[in-house]
Length: 492
Image (tube, rainbow, N blue to C red; front, side):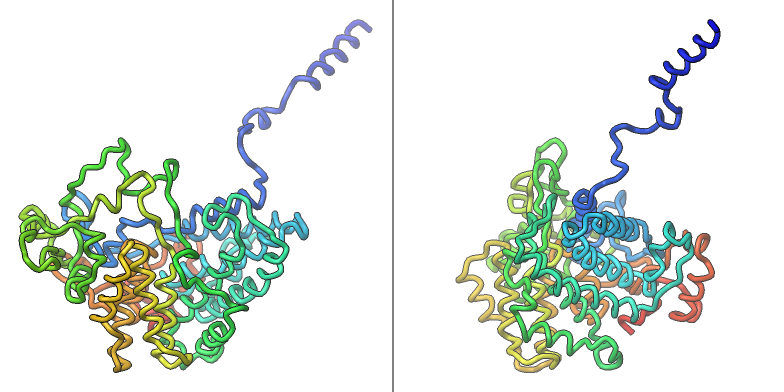
C-alpha cells in the first residue's frame, strides 16, 4: 500500500512538471502560426529590388572597375527560383490564414491575387515556362514534382488575377479597410489599386511582341479598357503614388556605410557610358544631380562635357585606369548619401507608367497624344530629382516628341531608360531585351561570346528534383536546349 501511494505521488509530480523532450526542444519565441498581417509584411520584404546592385550594372547604369569584385561580364548561366517561390509559398499561406478570418481576411485574399501575379510574372520573365498550377500543391496534394505551365498560360492567369484584384478593391476601400504592417503604402488600399492596374499595364506592354498573334491575351483590348475608364482603373501617374521603398535608420540605405562615415570618393564604381552619353547628347539636367564631374574633365566650358562614363564592355583594368586618370564620373554623394535614409528605391513609378502609355499610343493600341504622356514621364522623373520647372521646360523643348512614329518610339524608350536609373530592378534590361533600346555596349569584358543574354537557364536543383517535367518544358520551348541565349516565347 505504501509503495502504491509512492507510485501515485510520483505520477502526479511527473504529470505536473515533466515535459516531453520534443516540447522542450521547441523555441518558445518562434512564431509557428503567423497571422495574415505578419505574413503580408514578410511578403513585402521580398517584393523589392535594391539599387546599386549587379542588376543595375547589367542595366548599364554603372560600372565596377576593381577586379576584386564582379564587374559586368554578362556571364550568368543559370538562375534560381529560391526567393520567388519562397515568396509564393508565403502568399499561399497568407491566403490560408485569411480564409480562417472570414470577411475580416478579405483584403489579404485580394492582395494575394496581386502578389501571385507579381511573383509568377517575375519568374517567367527570367526563365520562360515555369510551374504555376501545381506549384503550391506539395503539402496539400503531396505533389513535389509540379508540371510546367506555358508562358502564354501564365500570362493569361497573371492578367486575370490583376483584373480580379482591381474588381475587389473598391468595396474594401469603401469600407475603409486597411492592412497593418504595410510599410509601402501604410495600409492605403486606394494606392494598392493604382499599383495593381499600373502593374497590369507593365505586363501588357511587356507582351508587345505577342499583341497581334495571341488573341487569348487580348493585349490591345485590355490596355484600351484600362485607359478608357480611369475611375474604374486608377493608375500611378504622379510620384505621390510610386511603389517605392523608403529607407530609414533601421532599414538602412544600401550605400550607407556601417560606421556612418561617408567617404566621398569611390573610383571603383563609376557611371556607365550607355547612360552618360544619352544624358550628354540630350543635355539632361538629371546628370548633374546623380553624378559628379570627372576630375580631369572638370575645366571644360561645356558643363556636360565635364562628365564621363565607362564602357560596360571594357575590361575592368581599362576602366580602373580611366577612373584613376579622372576620366570617369562618380556618383554625387551629396544626393545619394545625405543620411541613412538615402533615396527611395522606386519599384514601379509614375515615369514608367506614363512612358508605357505613350508607347501604347505610339503603337496604335489606344487613341491619344503620345507626346503628352512622353512629356509627363519626363516631368515626373525630373521631379524625383528635384529639377526646377524652368530646366524641365527647357529640356523638353530641346528634346521634343518626334513626328515620325519610329523616332517617337525610340525617344519614348530612351527616356524611359533614363528614368530607370538605379531603380525598378531588371526593367531596363528587360526593355532592352524586348526593344533593343538603348543599344547596349558589348566589348572585351563580355563573358557570353559577345552576346547579351536573354534569359536565365533553369536552376540546377530542378534537374535533380523535377527532371522529367523540366526536360519536357525545355523541349517544348527550346528544342532541348537550356541556355541563357535561348529566346523565350515572350520576346520571340
